[in-house]
Image (tube, rainbow, N blue to C red):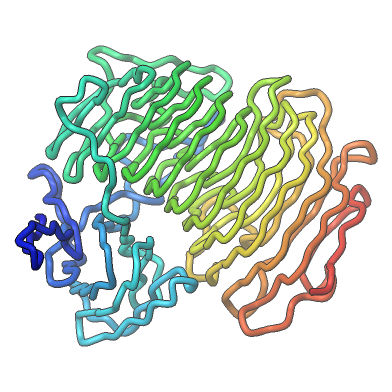
Length: 490
């Protein structure tokens, strides 16, 4: 609601409210765990399945349609100035932690209620009683600007309430807008049986829910939710940007993807700003830039069950370059949190990850995993803060502990080339880790001609401790195909 006051000259002065909220559709079940108020206003708390149970088979690991999983809660609201957040839990609270640490939020506890102040719009996660189970993720944005009109002929408008779609083919110049309080659910076409893939021994339901293919000047935005819970795994990608230019994605929440969340492929000049992702099924990669250039990902929250924000190349002779990932918050339940991973058919260069926070990682925090024959070069990981990975809980199906850095050149099921490529000129600096010890790291080349070269490490440290002085102190494992791996002074 807008507030209207009068100036001394009798003119109306429109004042935005301190907090903007939206009622949820009647079909949504509120979280049984938490009640939330912000600046005294009630805010609906949604639910999402995370960490869905994995079914192992001879092909692609997958999920039964009725598989159980953990539950996480999340809420969506906008603020324009500092606000007091109050959370009432269904269980007694003995301790509380608000992440990321960089947000610098301190909370107070009174029996079953927590209070803290948010000084600005930022995505935070609240953990209770020392556990990463049943967290509350708060997606806090700035008030929207340039909200499109529902009657604009260049707008695909989803108003408050529940909607169903199979696929939306977006045209050049269009805006797809999901209003606050809208839940847009992907569904299969009537009679759709999917396509069985003998390599992976599974049935795929291919396609894209919001598809921007061969278009220019497109925007997908709002404060609504795009939901794929009714699509079987492995199913539709949530958002696809394919052979397109001048595309912006912002503000909406993506829930329970049946396959990749955001796939940016063979595209240029793409901005992903303040996108919120929460997915619990395998292959639900967060934001993948493949064979693309000039992609800027910033202020996003990604919780998913595969690589979170990474660069790849899926086709030959088309490089991936000039990728910027900044000011993002990651909760990684599977795979790499940040990096260059797996499919590497074409060169990948000039990729930067800066000022990001990793709240949880049950496999690998930072890394490069080269499976094909291309060169990966000039990749920077800078000013990354990593929470205590022990809080994330033990991973299923994997016996080893999470690693801070994993850089490998090796053949695997995702690679296609007959020979491997090469990694060189990598910078990893100003990495802060919480906990009692640094997770281990590894750097493994394939052979003398396909190795890792010139990796500069500077200022990796446990919070409150001095930076590591050498690879041994880092807990790093290397082989003879790694050259120029250096720990530099500050």
